[in-house]
Length: 305
Image (tube, rainbow, N blue to C red; front, side, top):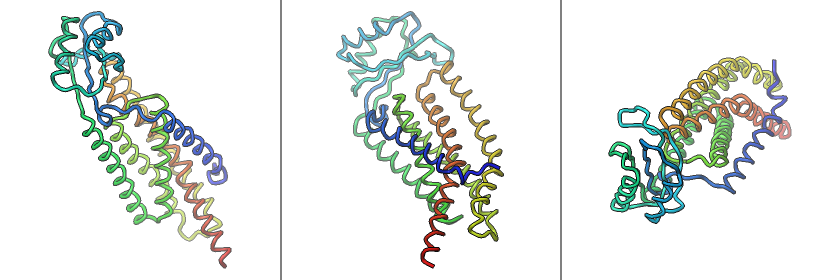
């Protein structure tokens, strides 16, 4: 049987390294905020003819939008069939008249661009700030409710260890998005909340097993109980995570090669990272962290006595 408690300092060191790199990236690079949070306008144009990014940039330059972010995607027609390559253009906020002028300029340059080949989304800066506030509020509510539930169902130290493991997961996912410059939007928040639920579910399975095995055990036997409980839950956690990851990878391939929706791709990437990191933290961080808290408690009692 693997001694997870004996080697917990190694897992804590790895987690500290991951968190440090993530925080460093967030401090230096920040987030690549989508229009949901930063405000702006996005055009998705599905071309039915050959084109180059240089031609797209020329049209944008004539409209005073030079420097707009461009990204190639797989185009789709309204029926969902492949329609050649397209491009996503991200600009500052444009009003309705400005958006019409840009679309007209592209249709003049690319006559095959039909009504169903253009998708436009626009969000003002005020709405973007409100979205940020709502996202932070949703995350705060989720954390508070999880702390309350776990503290009521088990004990506060379990709750504290679980929340620290969750913060570890969120910081690492956010750090990867910052490092890779992936777009952070409302689907990212939905993915984070999904990771919350998944990670807590894995953690609760293990801590519930710990609680069952702790009955009539002395404090000096707690290390063995934690190791046994994790070992008993290990196969279940790994099987659940691996099957989930297989589905997520299949979704990623489908979204990337057949649908071309960057919102969905970013959503799946966030969940893939979250599931992998959440499984690791449930096994190597949360329960060993609880054991560390209990060890500190016993030491303080010993000194007090």
